[in-house]
Amino acid sequence: MSSNDAVKLSDAEWKQRLTPMQYQVLRLKGTERAGTGEYNKHKETGVYVCAGCKTPVYTSTTKFDSGCGWPAFYDAIPGAIKAVPDADGRRTEIMCAKCDG
Figure 1 (cartoon, rainbow, N blue to C red):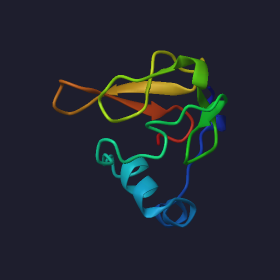
Figure 2 (cartoon, rainbow, N blue to C red; figure 1 turned 60 degrees about the horizontal axis):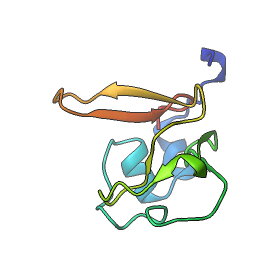
Figure 3 (cartoon, rainbow, N blue to C red; figure 1 turned 90 degrees about the vertical axis):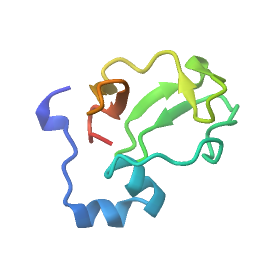
Figure 4 (tube, rainbow, N blue to C red; figure 1 turned 90 degrees about the horizontal axis):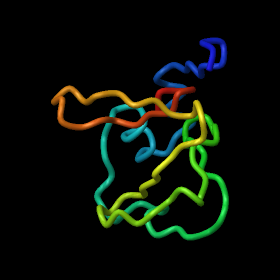
């Protein structure tokens, strides 16, 4: 993905576009409580898109139940995500490659 494709919005624009929970997770790096997200038990066929920029990131064919309380996917749509090591060095954060959400 080229830098020209990147979605760059001000903090105020993100707050207007996203729900409070989406803003907390996508912009402030928060985490919703395990088992509470609307897509954790979601079983319908289709494509999952980034809540911030609507970029397709996963297909339902790669979703599986990891038992952790959050949706899990074993593969992403090529070029849709990026993996960034958390500051603690023990985990990896998965982010949208287009909007960093």
